[in-house]
Image (cartoon, rainbow over all chains, first blue to last red; front, side):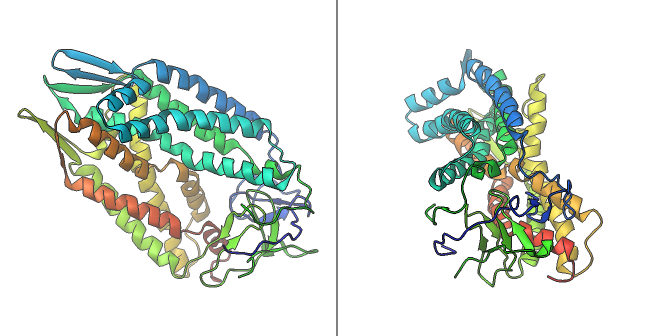
Length: 216
Length: 216
């Protein structure tokens, strides 16, 4: 660990009458509206951030529904056409005995997206932590969402590779279904939703004096 | 070591402060010694993580990645064969495999995520860092270039595509025989280099050297 557990009082930029640039970490007087170093817009706490989070969350969620109803892949083998949805495809894989891959698909396409919807909603509803431990848990959740969200794209890439590769005319062809489009949109909008979140709001309700010591 | 960042006291020049973008805690700036990192006391976000000679290493890695991306997207990536029929595709083919109607948008997005965004990020990094490493004044629009590069960070998905390949290969395995083209191995190296480049780059150090060109 880089530092020992301290319970020194932390002064926030806002308390010091400053506003921080979240892009390059430079401090400016609170009256400034644009960072003089990197040009980012300066907001002490982004009050409108939650509105954007919810708007993008809802769009992402709406897209996730057709993504699961429509087929993701159309496999044509000789005279047999097989359409599979996200979950159907994973179930097929599991039947074929490739449990590991089925698990990856289920994890990336179902567990991560649903977990993300839940996590972002949870953070947006209970934004302010009232004690140090809760703030650390929320921040951990936020970092997880930010880090892991992109990995949901894996299913789209699988579909892309399969439909480019498996083009054996008369023998087997794979084409993408409409679900691919909605699924990609859903991932993109949830990523934007997570990015719109201003994590500094988590610490707003926290009294600084009894800041919990290092235990993350 | 003790914490590299000390909470602020009283009035001090603003360019001697650094503020945590995640929790708004303000600190007096002290450049970490060799091998140290400055970490936010409250939320443990890494604020400064400089590396000795990082600039040159990053430039070298970035150039390698640019060459690899271009080569990997042209050469054959994967090929399959079954019952005398075969099909070979490049990464560009895979990315552009969504061809019908709205799926075309998806094609462009996929191509962007796996080829153009990583490529552009590398080029921007080279553009920004070369003058910094040579102790010259920053390149024209260097600030805007680095901003763009940072904004694209979450959308660079080469490593996710790599895992997607693994999944797709297992799915195809019982359908046909798969052969790896030269681009496949290039892409493998590329993914590792992209991750290395990302780990070496200290955002704060770049912003700081763009603001004070000769000092660092």
